[in-house]
Amino acid sequence: MIEHLPALMIAVPLFGAFIAPIFKKHYKGVSIWAIIITGITVILSLLLAKEVVTGGIMIYVFGADKPTLVLPSGYSVPIRIMFEVDAMGAFMAISATLMSFVGALYSYSHVEKETGLEKYYSLLMLLEVGILGMVLTGDLFNLFVFLEIAGIAGSALVGFRNYRGEASEAGIKYLIVSAVASLMVLFAIGILYGQYGNLNLAYIARNISLNLVDMIALGLLFTSFAMKCGAVPMHYWVPDAYTEVPAGINPPLLVATYASLYALFRVSFTLFANIVVDLARVGWIMSILGVLTMFIGVTMALVQKDVKRLMSYHAISQTGYMLLGVGVGLTVLHDPSKLAEFGRDAMAGGVFHIINHIIYKSLLLMTAGALFYVTGTRNLNEMGGLARKMPVTTISFMVGAAAISGLPPFNGFASKLLIYETSYRLNPLLTVFAMVTSVLTLASFVKVFASAFLGPPLEKFENTKEVPRPMIIAMIILAALCIIFGLFPNIVLDKLVYPAVDALINFAQYHSWGGLA
Amino acid sequence: MSFTLTTPSGFWNPILWLVFLALFSIIAYLIYSRGNPSYKKDTEQIKPYLSGNQEPTKEKIQVKAGDIYWGFIEALKEYYKVLQAIHTGDMRDYILWYLGVGAIITFILIGGV
Image (cartoon, rainbow over all chains, first blue to last red; front, side, top):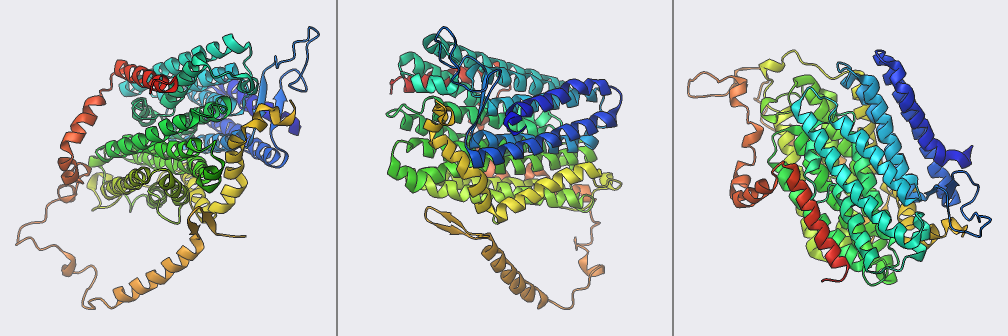
């Protein structure tokens, strides 16, 4: 069964998604079904990660047992859809399955009063399928297909509360942005297919000649994935989408955003890794986009009064750290001494920050969802004194806020420390921006804490009480992960992050399908 | 099991940090416990003195989120004016930004800069 894990990762949530509509009008049934299915995918992703970390790249060819199949005509390039799972893909798969599970658990109570829940959970599992497909596939066209699945499911979920005008608007915006990005990705894939007659990522990467047309394809792919991951100045869709989507969908939607970041890294490191001269240029573009993203994101967050919108701007800001960390690594990828000195650690910081951010931002957005659930508003001006009424939410918020601000000993600190130290080696100015952003992040969350949780108890919230248990459990799981990842950063780095980084750096291994070619 | 994370320029040990945190918390508590002993909780002492005026309702005295960091935002008014101007919420602008950035990045990549 182990060899079929990559296919099962897609098949299980896909099966779950298509079965979910059967539970129409059985709200509890469909919720529990989604929790079970997403729980199974968590186990599958852990098994997959174990297999990849111990045994190296895992290849799964649909309809054949190896990628080097030769047709009777002598045609010897890969002709089938292929999944190629390296440690980076496995790392992203764990993030996707874990957040889908936590999201399903949180949704059990959070959306219980909504109608059409069979569609909600079906879309949640389809979103998971889209993300998993994007991070596991080794085929460019397949990447486009899964990008579309994730985009369509995501936009439907953003607009799920369609009785709210803002939700419908945000859903349509997300759909258009996704469609435009996907269209340009498809165009770039067409350019590459036209030249090399193949869609396999490793095959194209090996044969790419890096001519003018290829560089245009790189530009299109780079910009499209940068927009999908919310890089400034193409981030405008993020606050709309993250604010309006039900809080239980925020965790998988965050991972969907970072699946695009993964695609950006995959394109830069795997597909175009052989551009020796220009790779530093790509790295610098990524680093500068990162700094812009973090600074503009945080300054916009500081002036927000809507608690979810504020946190959404922070999601943009934190993406900047990932771009900066990995951008620094990419800049020195072809300089072995600098790569060993700080490049690898910079990338580790960036990649580690992906999972850290997914955990604490999901936690924070869930606390915002809890505030909305209890008070019926997202406006911070109308909240106050809720710490006494919602102690678990308050503590969860404090853990998340400390983690996102990079306070020790929470998980955000370790990844930010690596990013600060390594970006300093490339250019100290990058570090200054990164540190100022952290200070402003803390200031911004102090504002949320002071206005929503502190202050005298307000009369209108006299009868409010803590959110239901499933929501509490989901928040506690994430808060615990913030603490565990913060206390044992070296273990997470050694077991999960450095293998993922090495998979990106050792692109030759990916190009040869783990040594099969 | 090692708790130490080695970074390019040093190391980070969260357990060591927690030990110091506990130590400093004890020192802080000792200072706190030497505070004014005449303080009594839940008595007239804790009521605010407003020159004989009646205490306003809790809603009125609460500091609203919109008032926090007023000075900071005021000082950066011009910067925020620009930021707010580009955050139009108009879908056409989103696509224009994408096209603009895409053109610049592609231009740099094909060797224009």
